[in-house]
Image (tube, rainbow, N blue to C red; front, side, top):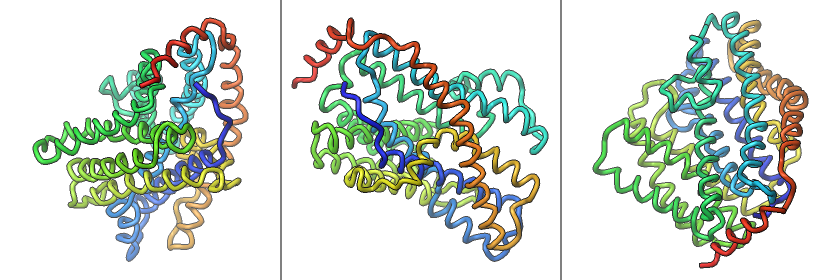
Length: 370
């Protein structure tokens, strides 16, 4: 598989995604803990009923993963092993740090504590599959990411990941299943599973877009077909999963559907423009976005504990701005001291380039022809 240099427009998308998540959480804090008076419904319209910035950001991350991860297998003697090692050192050290901070800060600042069994399960990042709740709500997306990584490993090992139409066929098949299920299945639990399928579909859709704009394997016709089916699937999932009767809980069919659909539109637009869409300052935020995603809630926790969220639009704006600024600062330090060194340390365990991988890569390439 070809490896590509870091793309500034992809980091820009990561930056937009993570700041959307931070903004959602900061403004939710205002609504949940302050008297917003006549602004109450304005907040809810913007954050829940008609849009959800948090879900928009998360889905944008899923598209980015689909664009990047399938092309992250190194040309080495053991590409699957090396991919798993690089992902481990990329994800787990910063994640474990966030758990430690949560165990220290949450009892003091939020008055919360967690059962040891829940902490142990969350440390694996697979708590969702154990039926154990996330000790921090943001952790749910990481399990979805791991599912995508495992899917890519299986597809790579079997030779299907490099085939021209694999991602396209996965998107089409999953969307069609969801669309067909809409009029006949109304069980809420089933639509929870289909929502997870929609998240994974966004990732494979990201690969379809990559195969169109960078790899030359597909055309915009393939993207268009996927987009139409994805939009219908997303609307169906949002309706069945959340309903149109808004419960003032920041989740509603309109807002969630809009978040999924706008994330696709934004990603497609940026991918079409390529590096022309890159924004240097936002690319910097994108580079440290994983740390921002994990550490942003702690920055907000501390600021709210000591200063509150304020009273009135100006103070609310200053609170949100302070949360964003503090999140970026803390996350930059985390990136420099934990995330980046651990990624570099993981490189020491990589296999030599080429060697035994030559025969594997040759067999994989032979399977690409259709």
